[in-house]
Image 1 (cartoon, rainbow, N blue to C red):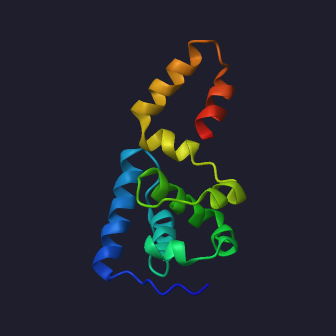
Image 2 (cartoon, rainbow, N blue to C red; image 1 turned 180 degrees about the horizontal axis):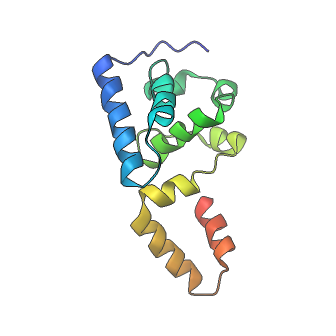
Amino acid sequence: MSVASAMSMDDLDDLVGAYRASMEQTGMFAGRPTISVARMFFAPVGVTGWDELSLAEQCAQPHKKRRVVGWLMVTGRLAATADYLVAARLNVGDIASRHHHLFFTRFYDVAGEPGFAPKAVQLQWSH
């Protein structure tokens, strides 16, 4: 993996801080292991470095780091390619439902009106 886009320390600290605050706001764990994984991803890759990785390198990221990528996606900081979304089989539905809770609740309610089962609604949301 050769990524030339290193982040400045201030940018790194800001992004890690935003990640921590977002996790806390959604009731997710925001302690040392979680934040350390985010820092280990952001430092060498960052947001702009993601596009410099090949599809194989993107898909080879460990699950813990791919959760950080999911967060970047659902918070509008990173636009993943269609190739990545298909190849990675990344389920960002859970992350998105926490970070866009009001929209998810509305989606869930509307999808339930015609009688879709909760599992079907969850699958629709994830897609």
